[in-house]
Length: 112
Image 1 (tube, rainbow, N blue to C red):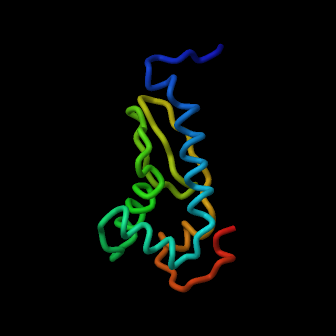
Image 2 (cartoon, rainbow, N blue to C red):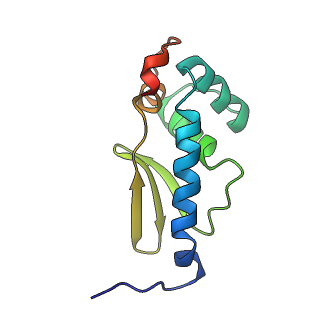
């Protein structure tokens, strides 16, 4: 049985996911140190612990993107968009995971 959109937020899902995927791709081209600085600048927060870093990555990805009532959060599989009972997870590069885990160093090949 096909699942029909329940409201306007459901109709915005495809454009939202495309915008988020484009942002993830854009950020994946940064080095780990550049990404760390970008997250700090966009989120205006320190990266003292994992929870703060997770929130910072989500904030950096959704920066200036209207999520249309879809909530974003970090999961072990990537960044999850949820609304009502619907959930979609976008995969993230290993560099994002390295940042969340608190790894240090400007290694370009972590971005792939």
